[in-house]
Image (cartoon, rainbow, N blue to C red; front, side, top):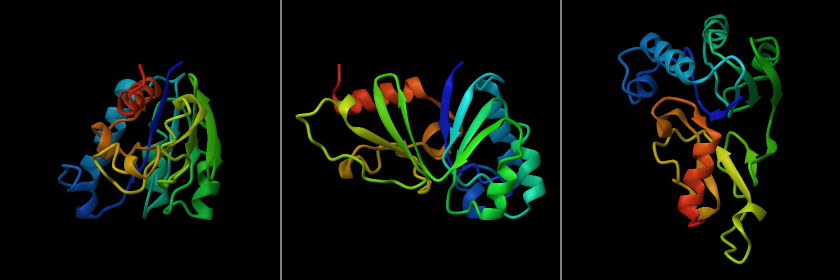
Length: 183
């Protein structure tokens, strides 16, 4: 089993500022590409943490898109994930959990999963990286995974920052170790 993370799928969000900025001509092309990209790397037995904003507008359409995604999913709610959608998410294919935030341990590191960039640790270089809590987030639609690194240990998981695909947690760890200068 592999573990992945991603954010801001925005299925059905039929606005040019979203799908156009991601390089697509329309929302249907956008949504198909997300599903195809996801399923090209995520297997049925894999786990994906989704850091919010799964769908907008037509919930039936959004659910149809979501149910095509491989793997088990743990959902962290985002700003577009209403109470009604939270109830929907609990009944979608492969969903194990829906929450506002979560702390996980992966490899030797501690991660705070939240839709929003959150300062969880300052740059206290006297402590090893494994003793800090690193925020994994989405929300800002940045293509720079280290956009907020200067504020604290914040790593962006938006689709834009990872070629429109979920990112493997081993790659997240490697990116962070390189950025922090851990050998």
